[in-house]
Length: 412
Image (tube, rainbow, N blue to C red; front, side, top):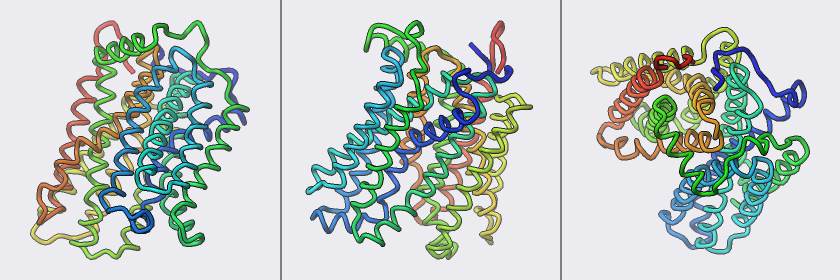
């Protein structure tokens, strides 16, 4: 097992321009699923009218896609540990393309739901396999840098998704154009994978036993305290982030009077901060221990959450300190996400399964926090800030305690 605090280690097959291309491809694989979730959000009313569906049915297309993303990661991740990465990622990327086209052509809400589920399954596969490939081709601090860069590129694509969807909707007049766009992107991505990415998981390193092997891989991961520490850190860190995403529109627009355009700008600035911190992290890991950077990011997030809660609980509230604290909470994910991910992936020889668990954990964080974000409907600012700071605090506690190396184990 290689510690991410160890010297730089890259596969000799990937260097220079080839590594740049690989990073962009991994970012695209990692970004496809969240992009497919966001690109059609501005078109929900049009979809309901055109397909004669209720708002709840249209919202269900988002929910089934999310379920598909989680299941796709958990199913395809360990499959690549036994069958290899390249063939499966090409097949699932083509399936994603076909599903995107199926969504674009869907004549009824029922077919749309089925296509969205398939789209989520294929997109989830891309997330798990991208993380496994990154773990195959780089180790130590090089892997931490690679994860930082491609996750930052993923954030960039996710930020752009609703903007692209809105522009396509305005230009073409139909919500279907966004999924035609995804169909084209997926085809290009499949060709790029076929040309530039060889098999990164050789025969001698593969597991045997099919679903039984997958079960053993997941059981081994569950028994690994340190791996589960990193997985739970991601779950809780993203629970904190989803609390912000779920409530910030109500808080900032309804309670503090921001216009929709001003709120969109806040989202863009915060997401841009996350992206920039991710690129900064790629430089910091050259000189600092990866786990130390992870803990530092979590401490900063907790401190910002405490200040945020204090600001919200004051009799006279001011929006500026709240905006600053929210920016810090979101931006720290640029340190937390790549470092917890690479440390978790490198804990296991079955990196497909490890990548699947870690990737699914980020989505599970949203599911975990959902029942709590609306506990104070008369004052959503309180529920948002309490959820942010509590989840961030538990993430720090988990990372500081569960990921400490025991006797005889090299500290990360």
